[in-house]
Image (tube, rainbow, N blue to C red):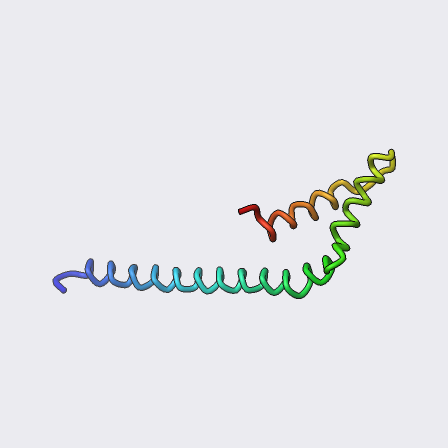
Length: 88
C-alpha cells in the first residue's frame, strides 16, 4: 500500500460488512419473533372456533345497533389479520 487510502477503504468495507451482518441477524430474529407470536399467541386466541373474528364481528354488530365501541381496537385487530394472513 502506497498510502493509507487503500487501507481506509478496506476498513470501511469491513465495517459495512459487519453492519450488514448485524442487520441481517436482527431481521432474522424479528421475523422469528413474529412467527412465534403468531404460532403461540395469535392462532391460540383465534383457534378453530374463530373466537377472535367472532368477537370483532360482535363488536361491529353492536356498533351498528347504536352502541359505542372501541373502534381503535377493532381497527388494530383487523390490521393484524391483514398482517398475518395477507392476500395472495
